[in-house]
Image (cartoon, rainbow, N blue to C red; front, side, top):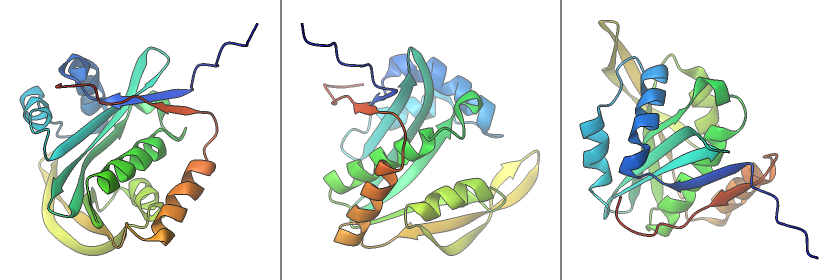
Length: 186
């Protein structure tokens, strides 16, 4: 008898409205000014220019990420991982998939904003080739205080060097990831 295929360690799938309760729990745990349900619903309704994904480990939704497209530029709108699952490669898996989705949608560059005081996230994005290109003064509000955002850009993501970078990041992960196809409206 053939052996049953092992379950993947992480499953990535398109975000659906049914995921929003778990997404909002993570959002509230990791962001001082969390997005609202209505904002996520609005983003999920814009299928032609948005791509949002969730990550599951077993039955637990443990992270999510999303991007929006504007012409040939991808903008990483959000990446978040449940604190109980941080430092285990989950954000790397999400960023890898967002990068692939951006390429599939024709992106040649990618941008994002990250809090100036979030050096761990900046290091993650740098691994994906994002370089600081500017600052948005007072972009975030945390406990009534305005915090700058660092604008980071990854240029020429269609090139061979970028694909090699993505492959090296994927090869550096332990465990397995399965990506489920998008099968219809959210």
